[in-house]
Amino acid sequence: DQQVKQNSPSLSVQEGRISILNCDYTNSMFDYFLWYKKYPAEGPTFLISISSIKDKNEDGRFTVFLNKSAKHLSLHIVPSQPGDSAVYFCAASRKSDDKIIFGKGTRLHILP
Amino acid sequence: GAVVSQHPSWVICKSGTSVKIECRSLDFQATTMFWYRQFPKQSLMLMATSNEGSKATYEQGVEKDKFLINHASLTLSTLTVTSAHPEDSSFYICSAASSGTHNSPLHFGNGTRLTVT
Image (cartoon, rainbow over all chains, first blue to last red; front, side):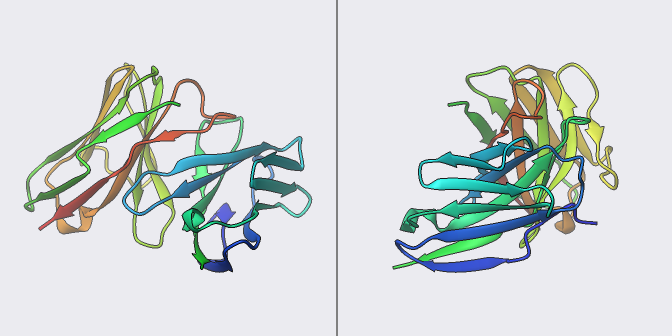
């Protein structure tokens, strides 16, 4: 049973436009959410996070929105750049244990 | 920023042999290290959690006798794939945390591509 779901395996966005990556979770005990970016043959790198007490966190071109009632979060990248082409993993954790649960990832293609 | 070094980046071995993968935290002490496995088009699957100086905690379905984890110091954890078989071929990634991972992002190594022939 997937507790963190990224239902879009891939997404193509024109350079300069907004990229929106979505993530849903099922466990209401999750209280901290993270996004990681991964290039081929490399380990994931941390991008941005949000605590469940917030509904928005912004860092430069990256903004994460959290809708707790819908158990949904999204990552917005604007403007999208060629270097943003990568796989993006949504992840969630809960205070009761130190595990981070990952979604399957969404491959983002930024088109020239 | 925090750096995690993973070695080797790729390895090819024959079926039945063992392979050791090292994970080092270069500029911080990692009390906890995690080992993940990634299959194509799949999520990062947590294999085990290792805490310095104690036995690793394995996730359900992961054979602890096959995937030996040692976390002998605050900067080094190793994963040994024993008696490797072709189905063990995968991308293995380690990550480290200086304290509890909750509310802290993990720092990942660059992964090891294991191919068993």
